[in-house]
Image: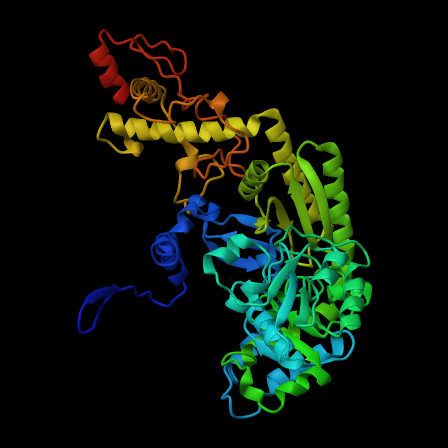
Length: 573
């Protein structure tokens, strides 16, 4: 720690020595710093409860600070289309660091110009000009401003359950009140109609409508795929009424759905196109909005009427440029279509086998939504998949659904691993085993707490620690590998019965636990590193020793003490 002083106060300023071990130092305080300086909600985050801090990433995998590997079926909400740390993208950014990192703003920026020419070559129709920013929300903000500037009108039609970002303009287009209401009043002139309903869309158009903004497939809405032909009908409708069509392909673009852009499935060309997320190659943040030369002309009289200090910086543009080249060279859009079909087929097979658990499977390419029959069930499955080495996440506007958005380089064998893990979770839920495991973990935690309450000693002094053979010296958290000695368990249970009336909830029996209820308890039978029996079913194995007479007694048995006091003393020793 260093000391920071100003005129009014003195504070501790955290320092870390920049060397090969500096990550371990910041990782050790990552959870507390996240809770105290980012948001206290990190204490409820699944990875926070497990103490999992991201350490490194590669390909389709991410690794935590304890060496655990996770198959990434979330893909950073759609940013890792070319995989984690693709070598070509990393190399391009490293090379750029030795030349120019951020541009001067005055001289011509060749990197943004080159990227804009590449985007013009791969986007549909006559989309020609690009404005670069740093995120999807910024891209949507710019698109809304451009639509109003070009048309001279103010009203924008969006859809219910749409998600376009959380800045004021993008939030106005977002179609769920849980995000909108806390920040009302938002921008005037926004209306929301049912997604997929072309009649409702036409009814909402009036003489002051500037544009319609749509996601070709709703992402946060629950991976909602409209009926075939819907996007084409919207395009025809906007042309009929002389209004603009803005397509938000922040999540669906860059090969995710099996085409470079989702609008290409129906041969639709938007007036304005928004991109971000995967555009940066999973290495740098970058977003952009694009339009035709006809529409872009309104920006010529005052080119700085919309601007960004960091937008189009050389590092981000270098990453995006190589990302496009990788997508083309490795045929990743086509691969997304192939692997997506395989994934969907496997998930639909699970749906047929577990119709009481899985309600729907939908998506296109490797943008897939798996909807369960209840929110509690979705949460339970999601949490248990994390424990079994698979990362997924829910969709913000559909709480029964989690998304599957792996890198487009995922293989069949990796998909099979995810399917097997998912089915094992569903089997354990159906058999009640998952509820037993959850209750076991929670009961062990309660026992630990009660043992501490009985005597002023540490848990380690009361518990017998048994390290399974697969554990290594780097394992700093041995909670999951503790075996509680039989006498301490008995004492703890007796104490808990006495205090049951005063401890609301702690006296519930395992049978009353709800299967779908999520418990973020960092105590669980080790999945990959433990084949031992439950620590409540067995005690630590004893070795047979000779008694005074020289005869061996049965393993684990002791000469019975003459009194309770000597029995307690002997057992503690």
